[in-house]
Image (cartoon, rainbow over all chains, first blue to last red; front, side, top):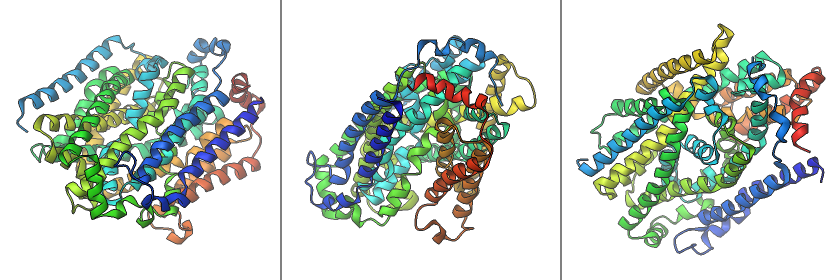
Amino acid sequence: MNFKVRLGMVILIVLIMFILHNSFWLWDLDARVPLLFGFMPFAYSYYIGYTILAVLAMRLIIGLAWPDPPDHLFEESGQNKTTKSRH
Amino acid sequence: MTNVIGIGLLLLYMCILVAIGVYGARVSLKTREDYFLAGRGLGSVAVFMALFASNITAFTIIGHAGFSYETGYGAYGYVIGWSIFITPFTYYLVGYRSWLLGKKYGFATQPQVFGGIFNSKLISLLFLVLLLYYTLPYLVVSIIGGGLAFTTVTEGMVPYWVSAMVLIGISLIYTLPAGLRGTVWTDVFQGTLFLVVAAFLLSAVARALGGFSEITADIVESNPAMLQRTLSEELAPINWFSYSFINSIAVVVFPQIYTRILAARSSANLKQVSLYYPIALAVIFGVSTLLGVWGSVAIPGLSGKEADNIVPLLIHQFLTPTWMVLGLVVVLAIVKSSIDSQLLSVAHLVTDDFLPRFKRINSQQAVLWGRLLLVVFAAVAYYIALIRPAAILSIAGFAFSGFSVMLPVMIGALYWPRATAQGACAALVLPAITLHLWYLGLLPEWTTLGFMPVFPSFVLAVITLIVVSYLTPVPSPEQREKTFGLFGQVFK
């Protein structure tokens, strides 16, 4: 799969997570959903679930769009470090 | 606080920090790369703890708990909800590509990376000025917050001016000799200590207040609005949405965070950090939220700045002297971990990006200058923390926003070959100006269209970058090849 397509999927994941964070339409549930573990109200427990989803989302993003650099990429870095272009 | 065991623990903690500083100085190479970047050899645990500890400040355990005290459980999602995902995502979005450039070309700071991408000394200077401008007040506020907390937990036995001095002094003990390596090792030690003690603190307070369920039942009975976001003016949807653009996306712009990313040994290390970071943020802010909300029933009637003291007050009221000291150590550890990293990053920026404009500095001299500047900045920050000028507090108040509106330029530089130096300059300067105009009340409030100023400034940064880039000459193929040729070999 082309990298741009994969990056597009990553952007989609980010948008979904952003919408889930700004899920104002769910706020009415604050008063109606039972306490999780007997003490966590929905406004709090929602973000326990969001955290689990965030880990899964990052796992997916890493698989889609986070390739490791090829071994040869930094072979000349030793030379470049002493002649680096700084401003 | 007369408990002998407690004082012994505090002394043991300080001795461990001194030992870290001494050992770090012995194993460190006296080179710029090693002092400021730990030789770009930090493993997963070190990078994770270094980023986490630098990310967490006095605000986490003091300000956020105080906010939760007044606002309720909704404070959790408001302050950290979006950060739980987007902060580690920015470690990929901005951090990984920056790391690749740093590893390839030897860049060590944001001025170097982004000045290098655009081949522009002006961009480098703008980054340097803005980063110093926002970091210094933020550093001062960290010292103030930590100093006040320390004084509160000791019931005033240790006055504020001594507390602030202790915080800075302890930070210098290991940072001065060992540089980044010293701060990272203490971050690993303190991060572990913090997570353990925070868990015990939470359960101790819960036990003292009758148990997790009892406390919630008390809150439901006395102040049910604490459970319902729709009843809070502070958490109005437009504020909730706007806040997404403040702390969460600002983090990767903090120079102390950015440097730690550059110091990672490998891509695999950064991946592991990004994967588990959501859990760390959720845990620490989750604890802070509960302490704040529970504090509202345990010690009712506080407001404003008084509410910010809720965690030290809970520690003082509900814990035995030994646990009080451990709680104090935790507060110290959190505050200090951000102070030491901010101090080092400021010294690094000036050593590597300001001084070379005036004189040639070799690698060993850079270490000496870095140490000297650490002491100078520590002294200046301490003095300002003592006098607490309103201007500093105002700038700190929108420092996060200032960092946030630099992000469009950083993303544009790393992803858009058409971005020009002129576009980047305009997109750095204009939003910084609008932020000041709004926060200083020089522009009428209605011009933000109801959003917090950071959101329209962020949008302005994006638009400015795009429009000015298209109106200015295309970057040279050689310039683009340096950055995007490298990325092309990785992102296939």
